Length: 302
Image (tube, rainbow, N blue to C red; front, side):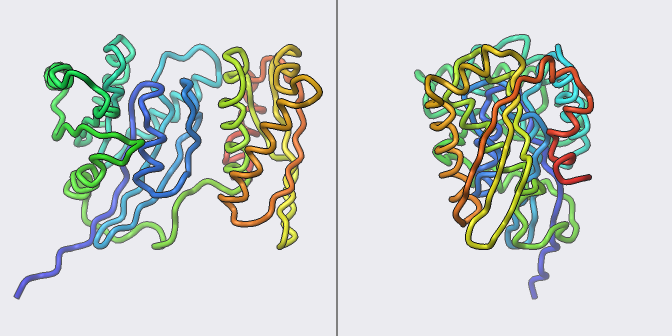
């Protein structure tokens, strides 16, 4: 008689340099959008947990900020978040297969090595690499730099190679009971998700000067049942950035608000009334109390 296999559960840190596609990958693996995505470095500012419950296994993904050298207090806190996430059962090291190899990759690999966990190398955007000999060269380079247990070409955007990733993870998870309920998806409170959705739309619609200087805080949250009323303040560091965000006649802010409201309605499954305000908060990236307030733990009162 065949014995039933024991249940597995554990944490999986998703590491890599900025803009490698880590958040897109986590969203694809979880099957829901739990992390915002933009084509700009340092979009993710905190560790975000996404939970996948499979028959016989539960995977807790920890999406981390892109590994980079710190310059501001905000960046230092982001890297503290990465270091705190290195105590993990399995590590995924995500590489943009189209990006030239650089010192940033070496720096990110140094962080990976500190985990001591079995590591999988995921070569994202492999479907776009041509000729394929370039992919083989990249694989050989990474083989020389770290003892990866598996190397898997993927496309996080198209979902290619993700079944192989899930299997490789489950094979290496420790035995143990599920750590979260079966329908649990993320540890992020709704207020934080709303703030992140609004920040994502700002990243998509504004110029290079604005994104790194933008923070969003939800000021009020009123759920009437039929309608969810949200008021949020967008903080920037310079008056000129406020002008860019608002736009001529307020058109840019209206566009940002409309796109954010539409996604919030899809995410929360109800009608949203969204009010947005823009405020100048000079040098907010160096202010500890402000950084605590915009962190999801601050919004949740943790």
